[in-house]
View 1 (cartoon, one colour):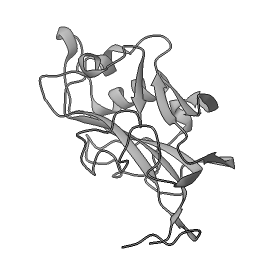
View 2: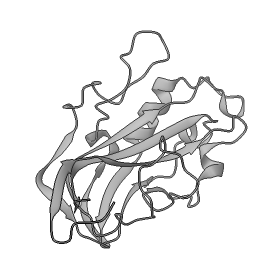
View 3: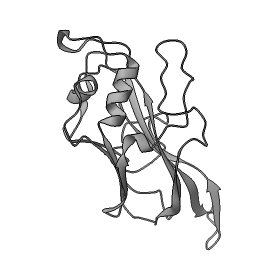
Length: 196
């Protein structure tokens, strides 16, 4: 279908990306490209729609713009495991160590737009606790997320990424966590694109 030049449409459309390991013999520490941080929205190749909805690394498709209104971190914690013969790590311990041991930064055009500990960005998604291994990072309600006081604009062809850094190193329960595990970063907001 042809593009209508000069006419734009705006729709509510979150953008998301994930870090994931599916292999039960791999660990988070061994799967990180950089031992200091996990980067989102920079490596989208060979990912399914479950893992990302971006088509190119670090930029919006075509001439689109995005207005980020909220950011959240969703974690599918690993099963119970025992790292190096130590105490058993439950999904709750893994999630606690992850969100209290890391810092999230949103960078747009190499400018830090926000940088806060991960616990400031609740998931607003997931299952309710109660069956022992189901964990949440916050209330499973889409409105229970961190909202920006002012929208954060991402212009056409502008690079952006989110980093989850570990200032004191990756905590052992996180570093040694085996697959499967997924961590998503979701930017909720409004996408403006050409009408087709």
